[in-house]
Length: 451
Ligand SMILES: Cc1ncc(COP(=O)(O)O)c(C=O)c1O
Image (tube, rainbow, N blue to C red; front, side, top):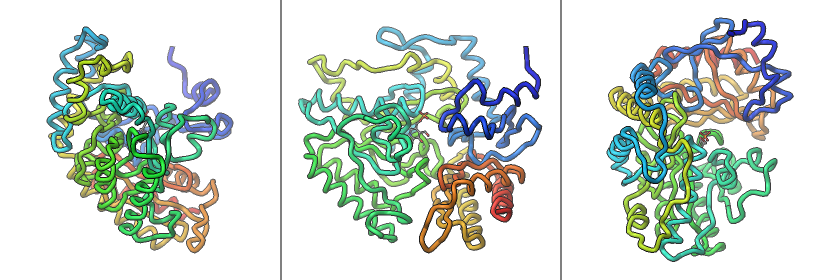
């Protein structure tokens, strides 16, 4: 029986734990109860409607009223709601989708798809398959992983082990042995005190070379990175960085995993982060926007030369002992097919670039007016962050309550924004209009003015 609004408000956070939240905090500050959505807006239980500047969780790229994806999901539930694709069975939709993904990611050199249930699963899959790749080739000692501090790769044990933020790691240690981190190309804060993005990129690349020499290239399976760091606070590296990483990896026999869980499918203004930087990685982890967030699904894309090593193996070492009950879920695959077609038809990458430029210019103008904004980062589509500080000279992070206060007022003024540590993160659907961008900026302005 449907429960009334009072029941829902009274029970809010009482019998469930929220991801990425302290259970006591959720009880003290009950979360906003979202009950509806349309276009690029969400509505809460009190009927308050706001532009969703979070885009679900970087995934609802086409907004909440994407009828082709909804229709594809409904039709697939009727035709085949589930069947496994473990050895011996397949379904029509995963076969079609692999073709589409291969075409979509042809410029990145991707040849095969391995399906998952989400971003963390995609990361885990790429990490595991990269170790197996080396074992097939007779280099069983290549087992370590390198990654960037500030990187976010989900919360599975493998993903957390390559993750570059302490709060996702410390409570769950010990993590996987053999995971090592290099400094992020983050000009606002870095151990080199270097503010020039290009020089900083070179220093981080030198740190990578140094770590490889220290560990021994022959012990390292893969390097994993986001082409633009997302959850760590939207950190776009200098254009020389990812190509530099790719060159160093290739020279040392280390596989490059591009974690494109956020950046694939247009968010950066390019169709993928790797394409933005002109890089062909060995694996691409994708998820999120692949189904517009309407169904949990992901795909790891595999480069042709990696696929060949597995497919030509005659020893049995390439048998894949990895996969999920929901790998290749037919409903997810049907959603992804419809989503890819809409993504292309609407050319959302072009809109992401244009609206992203407007939003970035808008937050830069806010920085001129509000001292509490220490840094703004963006310039590549619809992934933008504002880092809040107590004092611009010392860069002391703003008190914990400050971003939350901005969020609260901005919500009342018409936009849902995301708070992550001292950062406000903006990642709206890629179909936002210029008016929506103005709504987000006006709401943010109200949030800062009220501090
Ligand atoms: C770059 C990146 N990788 C992996 C993940 C983990 O994805 P999921 O939460 O679907 O497991 C995320 C989630 O935000 C992400 O941003």
